[in-house]
Length: 117
Length: 107
Image 1 (tube, chains in turn purple, red):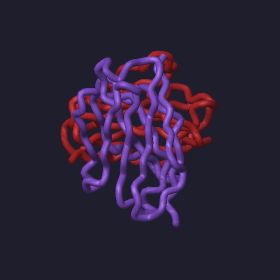
Image 2: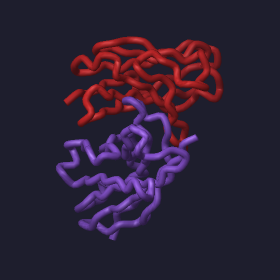
Image 3: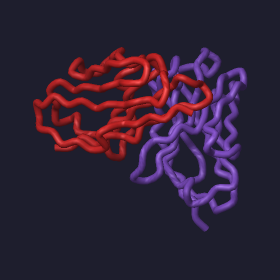
Image 4: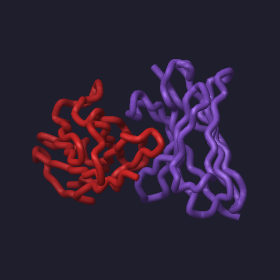
């Protein structure tokens, strides 16, 4: 059974870059699915950030105006998110998820990232 | 961009009720729609995919229907553990998935 676990700093300063990693166990990233990042500001709804395929193909939510970069490290079975120039509006719980043929069927537990000086 | 309009934003029900939540897409998304349940402080859980296919392990009281632009999630006989927030997600376009705004189902 696939398991996903997010990791990274819980506090990031404004204007800096948020970096998170999702470690996948129980399945190889090269199996053939997309792997996604989603976030949820406190008390608000879900927002899709973007996705990556093991070969490196990526898709991003245009509303992030080019600030997001998702990459994959198949040797470590991990994929990562970098979000630059963060503001308080980027404070959220960040989830990674497996994108199995256009459905998000396995999720990490989520990690809260707070943007504050 | 495909915009998803989910309604209602909140819904009150009693145990045993039949409830329906709807999502409308701003343009046709075929059946690229899934439904998720999220309880407070918990991870979203996939309930339905491809508009009407029940995810393995999800109780049969959950059902989904629709195609094109209009979709619905129905709970036939709400149980105490069903009180949660529900989201639809369109995945028609790989370059932009869009969630609905969410529906809070409470007692």
